[in-house]
Amino acid sequence: MTNPDSWRKSSYSGGGDGNECVEIATTPTHAAVRDSKAPARATLTFPAGAFAVFVEGIKSGGWPGR
Image (spheres, rainbow, N blue to C red):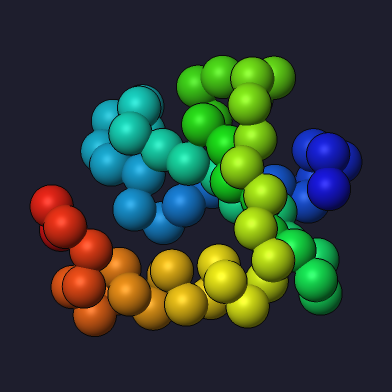
């Protein structure tokens, strides 16, 4: 999952230099998320099913602050 080609930038990265951006890398079993401004720092890794539920919750407005 650490292969640079496997990371893709969020389509919601903001305007200009995209300084409000996350990147994601996926495999059939896991999803990883990192800060695009500091890719060498901590990466959050989730089981694929849990990440899918998280993303759907955000899309449906079920996440606080959204």
